[in-house]
Length: 92
Image (cartoon, rainbow, N blue to C red; front, side, top):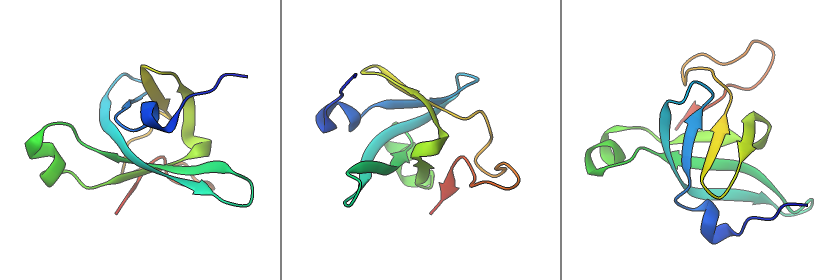
């Protein structure tokens, strides 16, 4: 079983499957009962993007892979989503 610490998750670069950079993880929520990550909170990189880009919330089911270098999420645009399921990223 692979393990990654919370310190390595915060600041992790997030890309979609096409390789577009969505931003970096700045927070994540833990489901207390199951002790599983529920969702990841992502913000754009750079000073301007941090203030101009809305927060992106990615549910754990939308994560394709995660390593100490990057997180890859479903290849759907922020505004689309997949019919019958949660959107890849919801804007807060």
